[in-house]
Amino acid sequence: MKTTSFYSALTAVALLAPTATLAELTEVTFGTNWLAQAEHGGFYQAVADGSYEACGLKVSIVSGGPQVNNRALLMAGKIDYHMGGDMLQAFNAVKEGVPVVSVAAIFQKHPQVLVAHPGQAESFEDLKDLTLLIGDNGYQSYYQWMMAAYGFTVEQRQPYTFNPAPFLANSDTAMQGYLSSEPFLVEKEGGFKPDVFLIADAGYSTYATTIEVMSATIESKPAEVSCFVDASIKGWYSYLYGDNAAANALIMADNPEMTQDKIDYAIAKMSENGIVESGDAETMGIGVINAEKVADFYDKMVEAGVIEAGLDYDSAFTTSFVGKGVGMELKP
Image (cartoon, rainbow, N blue to C red):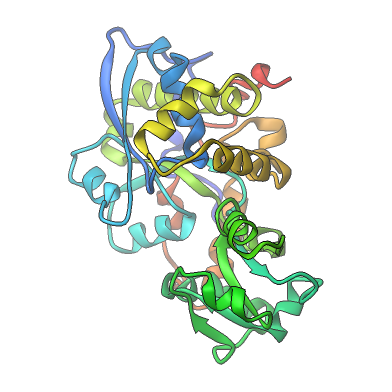
């Protein structure tokens, strides 16, 4: 088991206290991995409340979406920071020789869920009795783990087309979803409250909503990276526990289809399920990365046949910029 980050030599620089402040206001761009939503709230909050500017950054947020690949723009040097997905994405970058590094993990739990009709499954394992609507990406990642760890089968899976109609019409099915999205949609369109199973609570132990940056940026601009990470973390504390109206206005301006009731629902679900604050984050602060947790997830992905053994996966992340308790004073 590997527990030492490749960038541990930068720890002394990264741990400048309380937050590295740049000499001049520096403009940087942060690309998200989807359309603006509450799950991006802390970043928008850091723009709205001046947390980024307080340490010397003028941050522009560029939304992702179905036709936008901000990660490719990061690798091409067109943007400076990127909102990553999960650690499996980071492992694949190592496999492909791409020097992208995760410097913070905002979500301690992956918000991926399976949604079932009320009373059809009392536990995660009970879902094995249902037909599961799983998309191709999910089938190639977490569903492989579900088969290896719990005995789910290829045969019970049917493709998910991101249309809830087949699920709503058949109570013997369960479908994939995002904690704050599909359950909300089912309540609105189906008129019932579904049972929701968070795969993280069943053992799918990856981080999600990471902050990614190129390794060259860490080496050449560690104070800037520290500023961005610390300000983002403060933004998340402020978004969850303070006045987030200005951030929500920015979110809805960037995504006209977003509504306040969707935002309120998402914030409630993130809080109820410990998506941002659970485990190590409760004592070390939002954004923390634990090398042992990364190793645990890597081992699970190897066992499930999703990624190969022997990968230098610890080069995909660094713990040097997190775990400092930054922003915890903003929590009531």
